[in-house]
Image (cartoon, rainbow, N blue to C red; front, side, top):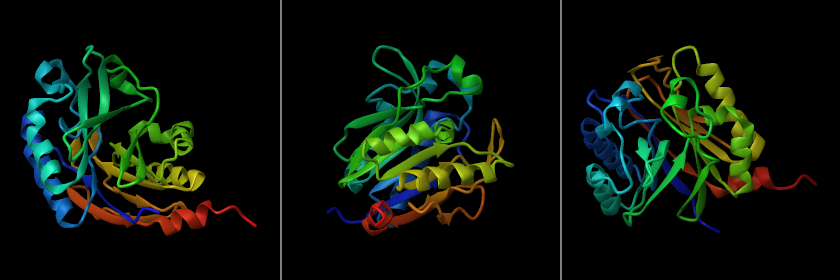
Length: 252
């Protein structure tokens, strides 16, 4: 049996200026999470550009696999042993545009999960993914979801069928959406008997002010920890196997 997994969800108020401006802040926050013992760090949806979709008219705001501008992120992951998941507009090798959660592992390798349920202006910019990517971090199965994916039970159900222990949502929920946020994350956890977490974009965004409320939910569907405000905040939780086993144990 694997031991507990320490995870940091980063509520992040992005800087103006896109990818180049935000990479150093990502590095700083990964270092902060590492100081709390995190082995996995999750950033919000499109954290590298702050969900500023008009920026994507400029090709330099898209990233590509192995992008040189993410070298500092790869280096901090190598140095700390942390796997970091950043939010990016990604063009695959064949040019396919994706709204992505890009996982950077300590060995320098990358894995990407793609948003499956696009909405609003996203549909004109990105091609939808097929389902959740599932990472292996210290023996834990971590499924990646992006915002509206969490509103669709089939997405988390597919993750659970793939053996996911954690459903990690990178999102953008704005003021007035706090109740919906809590229902989504709590229900996905309880329905599938797994941990869920949300890294929400903070501050003012192109869709309105953030509602904050990043945090963690246990396999019983109850909130474990929530952000105190709406700005940048590092939330860290130790996820244990005991709760998973207790709620996954068949009823006698």
